[in-house]
Image (tube, helix red, strand yellow):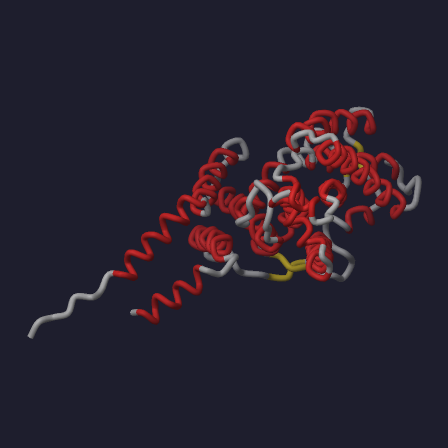
Length: 350
């Protein structure tokens, strides 16, 4: 019994235990609902299946969750403008390429221009939060409100379409590559971010600033610059997610691109076990949280839940998942486990 308790204790003490458990439960429900859920086939030379669709659809959210994780860790707040910034960057990319049969400018130039817009948006948000001391939600509310309006100005309030099929490679498949391109993009963003945070001192600096910015300044850290850089990075992530979104549809609809995605990004960070009050963070936890949200969405659609009712059911499930990871529930579980472990087995007489 003691050995069993020791094994359970080791498993539950794994940092990503709760996020992985949440993802596992969602996948099990999917398997019960759809017995062929884990089946992967090849159709028209590409991989096809529920799992592939979940990973593909969650790629943009994973990228946004990575940026949101660093913002939450450094500034104890959230960037609620990422959806509008994605729409704006996508609009700039499509408008610069034009709607003709050929591009008005080189594709790579339009991509760099869209990323530059994401950097500028990050600079605005970061300056307001780090140097002007505006609360993160209030500071990013400006672009949350104005971003789509600017995108509408860029597109002339029209839905613009891009005709060259090469434009869809980023959001779909590269020729003769069976894995969706967004999966590669998300993997590259996660790996590069992880390497920078682990191989340099930046990750430790972000945690130190998030825990106590005043104390970090006393030890020589430029807390304002660190917060400023995380918002710029979040703006770049929003730009990349916007490029993937417009590439999927080969068009830009400024009213719908990235709509409410900021809420899913914040939830991905929370489900991943990260604190929205700053400090320590888990990049992989946010990635798992993003996949969990997309898997949950797939589950609800498989249960024939309409798109209008989807937010309600998703909110109920997310509340349960977040509540299970709350400090109060964790404390209650630790106390219960300690009481069970101290109870001695009753010995039989005779």
